[in-house]
Image 1 (cartoon, helix red, strand yellow):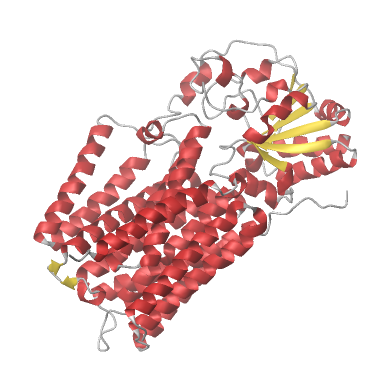
Image 2 (image 1 turned 30 degrees about the vertical axis):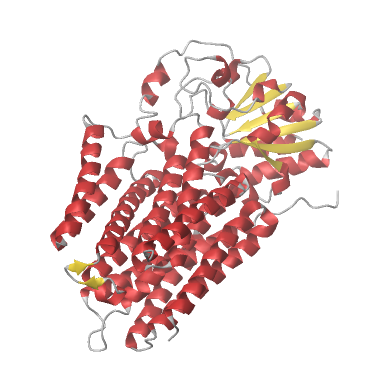
Length: 102
Length: 465
């Protein structure tokens, strides 16, 4: 009997929750704000769905209701991706160690 | 055009890179590399999507245009945003993830052929269930985050909005969402799909309005979690591993942060969600205001105490950020260090308005992160320190949390500031904090109150040192 591919995806999902659980507990509390902004950025990988949606129109009509929602989603996700990664980088650049010269 | 198997492998790689991105945050040294992994993962995911669809026609140009438009807005915000406004920014970003998930779900519902999910009106059952869950959670994330954003920004009052029958109403709506999904899947009716979205937007709104301003750290973390589950739901619809992995990561990350924040306030998650905390702010403000003697001093006294100390612990709170005193504070600390006084910072988990917020604010003021300690790390040191300098914090230092079982904050982990030889408490007045209760610390024998604006007082102390 064949196993539904959904089961495989579900396995990936469940295991990822566990990976997430252990990885996030190991994040130092002082970096919790960058953690939130970077999770924000990576969850915008939803842009892959938005791109498929945006390209769903045929060559005669690029814009139909479905693809317009796709394009809007692309823009929203792009705000998040660029904004999220850049603001994370900006924050992380501020974390400096004590100067050792004392 | 690349094969479906090859693209699936690339999506898996980008999922793994996202895990590494979070892993990097375990220490500040590896964090920048982690962020790079995240960017790389995103780049791979987007490129592979282009290659898989294989269409580089006019549509492709528009995709690039929209990415550039969104991207430049995002980049502009990222560079302009002041660090004090991070909670608002994150709440705003969450709303965008939620809305993007909703839009993708709408698009997939209207044109399932493009996503290989069947035909309109005859979408595969599994896909439809996943899609509607993704859309519903996305909608809740969107409207909830918008409310959180408005509350944080001060456009909407931070005080909880409570009305009669709120909880039964919410329960009815939640049940109706499940029923709607059931009928949507059995009838494939597009009307039901729109109703589902509308109801989900409504519940997101209703869930967040009763939550008070002091609980915003929990709310932001919770919405972080929701945005992850929404992404995962869409990931199942699109059969995309990168999205499923990321959704699970973000979902559990937000859940853990909510848990940490709840623990920092000693409140159960349900207690926060049901809301209403801090509603009696005004009432308790006036009551039990018995006159107790308070010792107050000026910058000169404070400077004298600190100059003669050998170790000082700084306890910053959000009030410090409001007064924009972090740079002045760091200058004061620099002067102290020149006089060979050991200085460290003690951060309570809920010191800022979102998890880790205070650490970012101190980092921005060039405070080295290895001088900043978490509650558990530093709490035993108060007994051996000479001076505790409390600036902009209040409830998190209140010894009542340890002594008075009647107190609303009883059991909340607090910083043992009162164990210090002397306590300097910078505050504008004796008014209570978020929890609306009096702080016993004000009246302790060894406490010296410094009534002034945090920034001005810190600068004055530096002058007197």
